[in-house]
Length: 168
Image: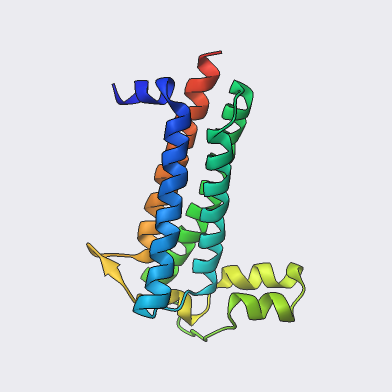
């Protein structure tokens, strides 16, 4: 019964995914500006991935053709896979912090100082800030919750793409 909703109203599902991403981004901004948690470079990359997922889901939700619906759903799978990878890497760093943790530059400082070719690998190395767990809910850190959300979004995109491709 649940999967029939994906067939009957795929655009509504995509709109809900986009809305959920916007809500998650708003919660991240709340944690940053109201609670006072500073995002690490990996958190910022996850935010960008979430913004891209929201944009792709929103654009795909208004798409008229089935081909664009399948392509957009596939894009959701790829983008959420990227976000899940970054969140999983950060979760790993939190569970098994490196012995020498140094606080690195923030994301914007890296982009302004180094060429993009050098800044991207530096972001994924994770500094001491990326290993710190400032906030938990039900025993999971922000990175853990981010991973679960990206996986859920990826599964939704995969189900939508497969169901729409079979309906052809």
